[in-house]
Amino acid sequence: MAAMSGKIVQNVFIAQFYQQNRQFGTQYQRDSCAPYMRTLPHLNGGKLARTGISSMQVRDLSKYQSGFVNLLTVNCNAASSATTVPSLDKVDFLKLQNGRMLFLEALLVLDLMLFNMASTPAMFNSTLTKDDAFLCPVDGAIMITASHLPYNRNGFKFFTNAGGLGKTDIKDILERAANIYSIFLAEGYSVKKASASLKKVDYMSVYTSDLVKAVRKAAGNIEKPLDGFHIIVDAGNGAGGFFAAKVLEHLGAITAGSQFLEPDGMFPNHIPNPEDKAAMKAITQAVLDNKADLGIIFDTDVDRSAAVDSTGRELNRNRLIALMSAIVLEEHPGTTIVTDSVTSDGLTSFIEKKLGGKHHRFKRGYKNVIDEAIRLNSVGKESHLAIETSGHGALKENHWLDDGAYLMVKLLNKLASARASGRGDGSKVLTDLVDSLEEPAFAVELRLKINQSHPDLKGGSFRDYGEVVLKHLDNHIASDPKLQKAPVNYEGVRVSGYGGWFLLRLSLHDPVLPLNIETPSHEDAVKLGLEVAAAVKEFQALDTSALDKFVQP
Ligand SMILES: O=P(O)(O)OC[C@H]1O[C@H](O)[C@H](O)[C@@H](O)[C@@H]1O
Image (cartoon, rainbow, N blue to C red; front, side, top):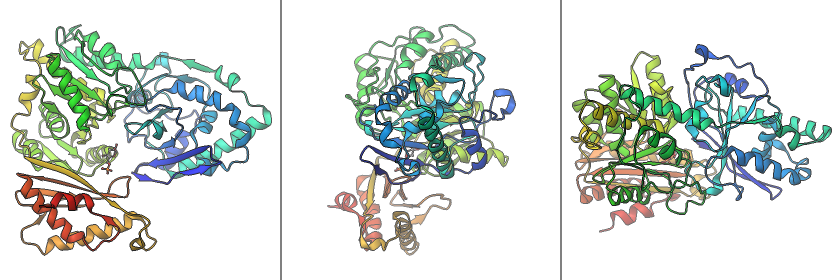
């Protein structure tokens, strides 16, 4: 994911663009994203093959917007910002990069629908699946969310069935916004009038009923296939609270003890992130305290998830990948599982030796893994699952939509079908599937910052600098007989040694080189850490303090 720096405009707005790499038809995406061009061709009669993820977010640091998804908030903010309109007419829109103007543009569409609070996958789903009553698939969807980032990092996400937006798309949208804004100024601006065309719909009920149907179907069309199961949801005060009442309870599960279901962008309890230790501790504790069968945790906008079994064993990161691989490989023997780059060696042996599948360890970044799985299929290499240790996961059967709720539905299917076939062992059915996964005794991630203002960068970018560091490390490894470079590697420098491995790579968005180490012991990890420290010590702009602290005797 490439990031551009934010800019302060008239001390009122700060915005940043976050973009991801994309490999698909930018021209088509640009055209399909113009909100007032409603001639988007619908492929396959509405059931659309997805070619990517919406990946542009215009971030707005308004402190009044919370960190979860709420399209109603867009409406309210746009209306309340009307008082600031006069000061904006002098603004260069291309510098503004602010979401409010995009809302003005959206107001020109006919058939504009307001979904209220929704999850990221639900928004995307609305561009993919057919529902005549809701005019779905819609041509485009826009949401406001900070994803798992703090409340002051809200942004706009744009969804079309064709994938995300590129830099040129953003420029194009802002130019159109500038034009439309001048028309508004000339003809008289009225949010009230424009809002009258808004149709408020409860799209989440459409989306959740599909999830419910999927579990019922997997259990042989039983109405309440989870009858009596006690399943706890922790939404971390993000947007995922719906899963308890709208999915689990409809399937017959008891959800007592579920926590932090009420959206609160200040996240007063814990960060909604299935990789976060405090978050995993909170759901684990809730499962144990309530003697529940299973715990489910989502990130803020529900595109990531993880679970906890009845014994309190966390099913996240490599374990969640192993579990999903076991389920998918039962359905599609021999298929390729695409994962991010920081996955364990033990996961590879599990997928390949135990499950008979293929592990394609690719790059970090959910869009990267999904796009790679789509590419593999396009060249005749079958893949049904793309999944990251972060908890993002997408299945071919679900239009390659990275949907944390759908991942959990796959686990529920397993519970429900086991129950239906008389093997009602609760979450043991799941845990047994990953029993033989070998896990490292020691794992750590250290993030080494690049000081972008250091003279050592010689005016170049942090990326260029990071690449030089990686090249240097690569050469260092080649001359060390104790270390072996991974024969196949798509990102950074991955090296085996001392019974474990390390990977140093560039962060997708930050001026940081994350270093992951997994070894049989802390001592072995220190040995690998010392190798890296020796190789990078001459790079003055690299802040190695985290590594230095780690390798200290
Ligand atoms: O490269 P990093 O800084 O570790 O961040 C990588 C992560 O960034 C975001 O959280 C994306 O949603 C993830 O898909 C990605 O894996």
